[in-house]
Image 1 (cartoon, helix red, strand yellow):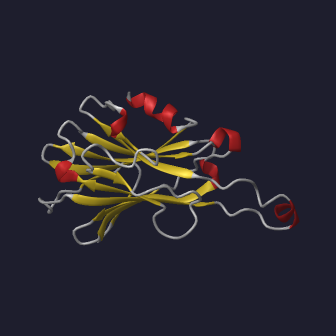
Image 2: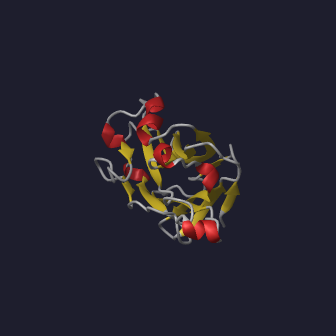
Length: 200
């Protein structure tokens, strides 16, 4: 049975699953519905689609990202040994379920990697004047790929108006176990390159 998490909550993914390895991290969001009516139809319904991008940042024990290969996003879909693989970009957020998925093979994550941080940013947000106040129903969920069961889900329920990036959650080592922490922190970074500076 899936566990619904709240901000700041942590769970042990390995508990009762000593051989846990293959996970799917699903991230999803919905664009706020554009206003209907005369003005909406005259002016294209409110502008460009909101293109959210999910990424995984692989950190060592010092909390640093060493090398570009440890940033997994639409421009670099996998790390060197394919233990972290991004399934590709979704340009609109339309549709039900996960908008982007990242596959993990925990047994093969390099030993120097201590933590995997999952972030979402809005592509070209400054030019398009978009922020996470225009997004609703954002979530992250963890699925055990051995049985396709959802292990946990964290719905980001805060008001993120004015925020242009989200640090959603993290999977990290704790001795021989793997744990997940629900973060849900909004930031004002205008791009992924700005966001990762805090980790380099």
